Length: 411
Image 1 (cartoon, rainbow, N blue to C red):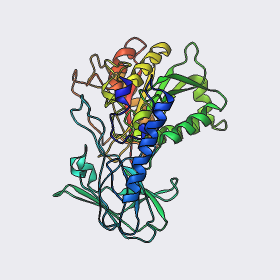
Image 2 (cartoon, rainbow, N blue to C red):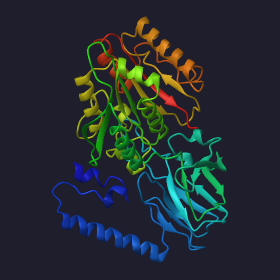
Image 3 (cartoon, helix red, strand yellow):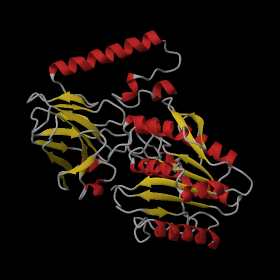
């Protein structure tokens, strides 16, 4: 199973380092040599390739997405001022009946002072084409400071166009400021080194990445267990930026609110539930093409180990409150999606959810309750979704805890 999963994405970055069980190091090395020779041949001929490594014959402009969280396909680079690209889709997702696409992230070099015009030919066929209206792509020279660049979407042709004249030799373009897997590893490393933090390695993904859960505070009698998870969908990096800021404040010894919170509760934070999708440059799925936020009813180790292991540890620790952090492509607001449609929704649950929203609005002017998804009708909640399934599984047995999806805006 794992051998086939490793090659689901043609030209996947995973092919450079991933070695299936039972394959010798010598065979793996030969495969990498062959891949390197193929890539070198493409550079020499100036050819384009579907995995996002190519160069323009006019002016030597290079495009590359062959790295952590990268995604782009190259159709035509004959003219640097008229480059045609495609967003590479996720593996086919059975629950959503489609191959999702929206996320892109690539680097261009030898571009200083050149008037670039980049056309994304399949933008109209992406997962949320309405989100392109008014959208402005992100760009960065140093991968730390990001800014928006002029972007237009033609509804008739379904083509998204970026027009930009870079000031530096190299520039990165992305759907949103990326939170790469390497940055995630740095976040885990520096956070687990702080006082009062415990790192729990709860399992591994299909690609062999660690599933990292951070425990802040000490569990004890009468102390609620609060869970905050983020980035089930890898193309929503703002969810992990949210987790980054949250962890920074919770571990600040000079923050009185954080100290009192960790005195009274135990926090479990999982900043990235889907590291495989993050590393591969996916929008919504893991390495097997599973939308993890549709796998909570019956997760399995074979195709959704991320949810399987997370639920296992939740069962061990108990859940009194859950916040599942996402980002929405079309709604530029901070809001929550509650669990009103689950069986047994009660006035007490509604009161807890309303109290959470009131407290959040009081502490953050960015949060609001006017815009959002709206409530599911009674009994019609999708029980494969995390917040609905966790609410049903735990909250009736452990005192009607609060569970919700929190959506942070795209900035």
